Amino acid sequence: DTPASERWNEVVHDHLSAIPEFVKVAQSYVPKQLLPIAFWIAGELNRFFPEEYADEIRGIAKASGLPLGLVVSMNILYDILAFDRKHVFQLGCTSIVAQSEDGVIYHGRNLDYDMGDLLKNITILADYTRGQGEERVSPAPFSSVAYLKELPSLR
Image (cartoon, one colour):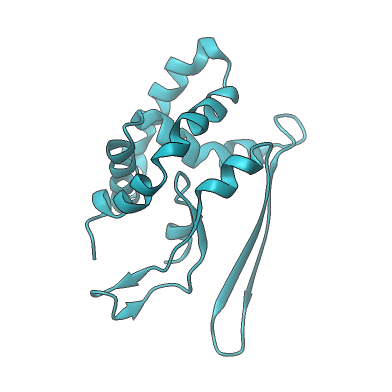
């Protein structure tokens, strides 16, 4: 039951060495002259996210030293890219979700981006729990240091 703003601190600190490459790749998706305004807009969008999710993103920005707008951008990048792959980018993910007979939910995702080496180094196996670990919220889905979409989808 760690506060949302501190929930990802350990994970971020474990992956600090990947941040420079992560920033380089993230910035490659936006024309250089648009970066300041794009990241400013993204940072402003954070206040429209659900409170807990917004707190997590602010916490990641603080723990990593990354600008809030960059962290928000990476959390909405998939939504932007997947919206119209035919005209925007032909990148994205293929996902499958299945439930076993004993109720365990499995989620698999194919990350079809040109940043496979980076993603494989910041992908983690997370086990979400509540109540000092007494109640399991989810069966250890894969998540990413920079991409929190899995958590809201588990509620």
